[in-house]
Length: 152
Image 1 (cartoon, rainbow, N blue to C red):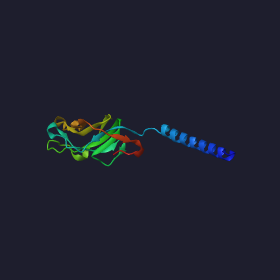
Image 2: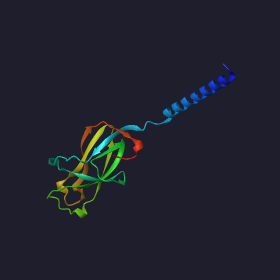
Image 3: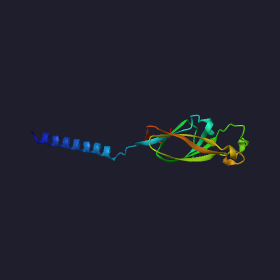
Image 4: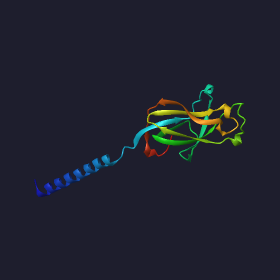
């Protein structure tokens, strides 16, 4: 083999080695963006026999949101601000005096939380007449991809 061919083969070999090292380092240094998540749902009508009523989410983690039926979230604590949709003749607080309330949920992996407004009929003369409430927890498999950077 000529000296030129030997140098050319060595050069190509070095380039290939560097290329594969670059590929391998890119694979190992890129963090896995997918991780476990949970789902918070406000769409399911709660059982009225338990004094539970629908509510609307207005803010999530301090940011205003357009109300959605489901919020797929990474694990950890999330703060929901909500307004109740209690419709009962026993409630004598005008709509203009009803205030939003917060609910903190520590979202666990693969868990779905159904939330509602819990009505307390014996407190209808003050703002304690309702509390945001997790009325059901279910198993739910999901993966959250942080690269999308938005909640569903």
